[in-house]
Image (cartoon, rainbow, N blue to C red):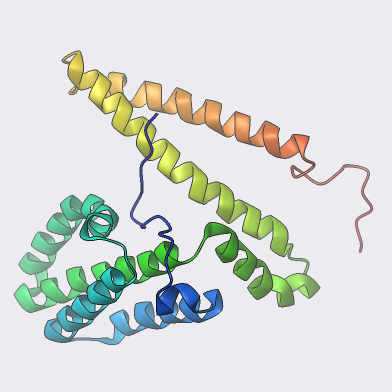
Length: 213
């Protein structure tokens, strides 16, 4: 199976300001940008914000191809959303909604393109630390995110490979030829991941473990 990105850009080694910035600060940037996108009501402001984020993304050393790889898969969905919102709310509102979605994706891609996955997971563990008193397990939470980050590109890549194979056999319009192989491969991947985690003692808690009242 060939590798596939999914919505977010893969890490790009570099020495830019964003590469050197702490992961926590970049998390705040993503959160603030996402929050601002819900507050902005002028599509021109959204367009200017998106342009600034794209310039910032390119300044990290990630090329236009990586930027397109992050937003490209969204284009068909955004076209549908934009057309529907245009019909319901008009052109300016439609443009604002589409641009704000792109702002969130590019902002998140800035984090993933300038921060190694392990640093992201370490930051998640640190951020979730205060919730230990409520019974949370920060390490398990970070592990879940790590598995998700690994699984989504794998499944997306599986679907693309199956689609190409079906097209080569003239079965691209046959739902069974597309869905069934992806389902079987995904279940097998999930089982292998679960077995690997269990072998490392990272599965379900031990039955004999004492549960505090």
